[in-house]
Every structure is written in structure tokens, then in C-alpha cells.
Length: 100
Image 1 (spheres, rainbow, N blue to C red):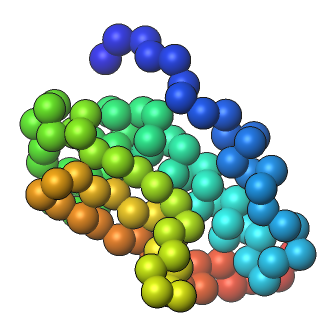
Image 2: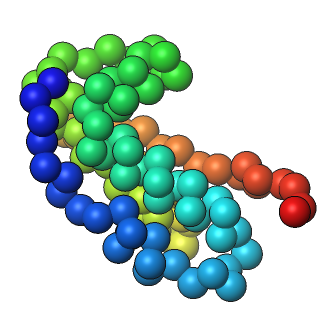
């Protein structure tokens, strides 16, 4: 895959979150994971194949949109991956349940 400039800055994505929310670590990991999937097509391709058994062509892969923290009628989708033919919702339900 040829070198491609990043379309957004990960720090700007993380800066928008209030650290006093109930799940700051979950939001942090969600934003980092979304950023990586959005900006590394090889990682996205491997994630779809290895985790979801979805094998897309390069054109289909390039047409995917990856977004985070989507509000659907008051229900938040952590990560949404979609194109005109496919939609994938990723929701972390108490993914991090530990104390430091």
C-alpha cells in the first residue's frame, strides 16, 4: 500500500472527550482503534477478515467509512463501519472492568 497522508489528527479526536465521563479508557481506546482502522487500510482489511470473516475487494475496502461514537436514537454505537452494501456496528459493553 502506498504512503498516504493521515486525514485527521488522533490528538484532536481524543481532545474532544471530557475525562470525567464514566468510561474514559473505553472512549480513548475506541478513538484510537477507530483512527487506526480509518487510516490503515491493511489493518482494516485484516480486521474484517480475521474478526468477522468478511473479505472485501480493494475497491470495496476503499469505499468503507469508519466513524465513532454514533448516536442512533439515543443509543451510541462505538464504531460503525459501512458502505452502500454493508454496515457493521461495534459496541463495547463494559469492555474495561478493572480498577487501577
